[in-house]
Length: 107
Image 1: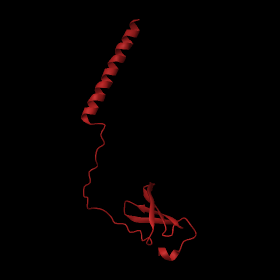
Image 2 (image 1 turned 120 degrees about the vertical axis):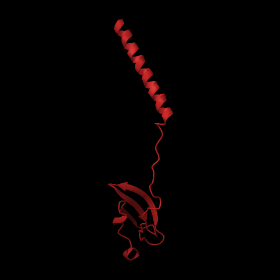
Image 3 (image 1 turned 30 degrees about the horizontal axis):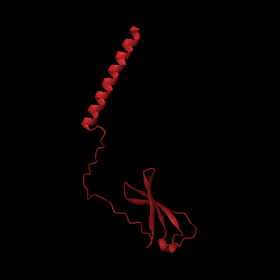
Image 4 (image 1 turned 45 degrees about the vertical axis):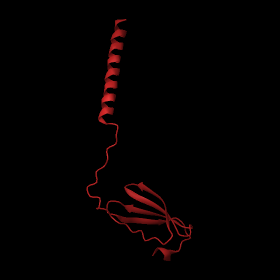
């Protein structure tokens, strides 16, 4: 019986410590996400995709430290993926997903 009393006392003590840390952490704002500081807001890179007029961006995702932009053509019959390296702002590669596209529109 003595062992159970010691176990209950230790577990009660641990519960009080956990509650104290929870209240203390909430009061200090440990649960809030910190805002990123931007050193120079004017330091940005412009990237020109040179897509034909009427093209639409369908989605922007990331893959292996590259930005992947999915674009549909002006007549909705062609789709392509553009991979951009965000470190230098250069187009890494372009993938045409359909065979029925007019190459002269993209030159």
